[in-house]
Length: 210
Image (cartoon, rainbow, N blue to C red; front, side):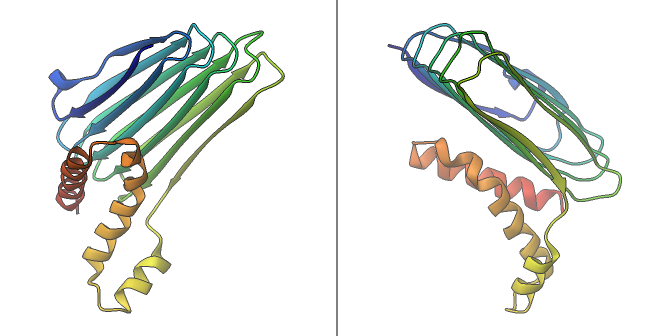
């Protein structure tokens, strides 16, 4: 039975993940990608379930500034019953960055007992940054649990006020907010040292865009 985990740190076009994951019965996969400032990329991830009881977790972070263009496309196809997919992609856009998220889930005829979840959440830091998000669900079975959603917004000013009232400078309050916003994406990483390393890299990226 196959079980694998992949982490992609996308800091140049050459580090672009292009993945087509095919999961048979009982197999599991976890894919995490992190896009850092200074690179424009197109990230396609496709998943096909071909055996019952398989599971996939897709996680993504992007931190963008300048005129960067980041396009993320996920295509998850539940072709058989009893499989689980869970997608969480969170990102921050600053400067003139343009981010596009197109996430698609298809639940085929007969793929009963499917569980499929997809979320894309975004923080925009400037008036000229742009995020286009399009989560999609196509369901052709009737006994399923599926959800999808997306948000685009700014940093919470009430949270900033609370932290500033306790002596935290405004810039640091914003950094703490953004770290908290992106942290859930890293929860699937089991290797503690790797998780700590990537968390530090995320914080460094956040500080570089303020």
